Image (cartoon, rainbow, N blue to C red):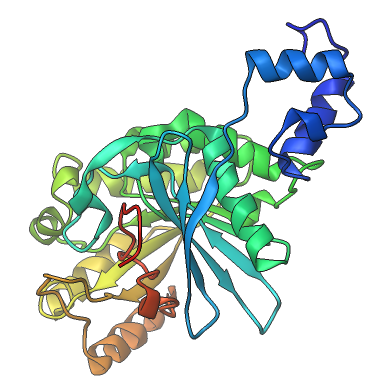
Length: 328
């Protein structure tokens, strides 16, 4: 607005139209002068995202294909909770993913491009409008590695957190990373209290390298030190995500390694029974193994939860999101 010679309050008006009312045309921004609307339309054309497809699970979860102006598509998931009336949106940060984790469908399609801040925000706005209720929680756990698109992701989070916009509290916004050390360090210096989750999935190096080959250069001791620095600087605990895969990372040795990794770390452990993918031999751990892990980790004084798999019947659960144009 400064570049256009406009007073600063015009920026607030524009932000309200874009991120509260979610209008798709400058023509609808009725409290902006006509000349300004014409100038904005010419110099900064809007490219609204659209919901290309939608699936609804038996548990109320909805999965969306969001299509952008260049034809690129990502998937987002809306997860309602009837108990406390919460609405969590799981959004994507990249079109595809370059990390190629063995248990994740997204990486199999490869990486296409980073998402812009507005494209990240659009996913949230479209899902909120479709659900007909205000979003309360956000998780950057969809397609892509957020820290490989750091600037755009942080810009989007600040738009979503902005007090005169959607106004989602920073502590209700979580970003999940494969464990990129530079990103964790950088995230620790951000002033907002956004929360951090790390896809750990194995605390033994050889097993983690098998499951997350692109992270093989980031050794577990280095990750542990980075997380310790993060928690010491922010005084905020980290969530460690651990997909449970039968006979791959759920042995007694794996359990001992996880306990050692977490022993002096301010963290919460989230166990995730793997969701079966087409053409994958991975299967979820047996219930007795899950119980054994829960009891053992709790006995060490660590908080642990098991993620309730929502939307698995529409391929909307953890690890199932694909970079597709249309559902089959």
